[in-house]
Amino acid sequence: MIQVKFATKEATKYACEHWHYAHKLPQGNLFSVGVWEDKHFLGVVIFSHGSNNRIGTPYNLSQFQCCELTRVALRNHKGVFVSEIVSKAINYFKKYNPNDILIVSYSDPMQNHKGGFTKLQIGYMLAEVQKTKLTF
Image 1 (spheres, helix red, strand yellow):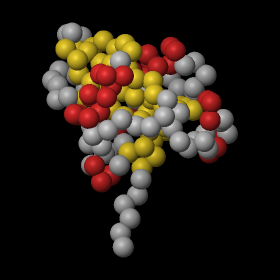
Image 2 (cartoon, rainbow, N blue to C red):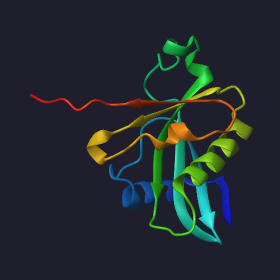
Image 3 (spheres, rainbow, N blue to C red):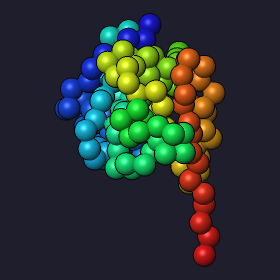
Image 4 (tube, rainbow, N blue to C red):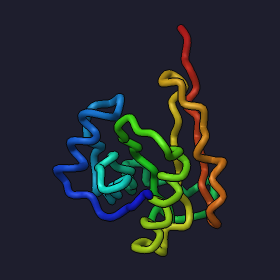
């Protein structure tokens, strides 16, 4: 069974440094949701208001109505889909941040990201923006 709750700064840092391809914490004020499966720590899902103060502009929303799904830093695990983990983390985040009505998730095709989070059906807006590959 998956459980989510606040993650400490230390747990967040450890998960990002060990289980995320960037190997570092994102900048800014973070809301870190820790994930446990049968009392084993799986990692964190991190939300932030990020550095883009115009994040909500395309949707006619203020910066304070939007946030970014900044990191999904999970160890290898069995028995649960990442989409289930992210869905539970988003619901937990919403409980403490009811004014955020849009969550933007950037996917990186250079890391083989496919944009799967946009397929979550959880009752509010989730936008996924794919970065384009630039060739010179």
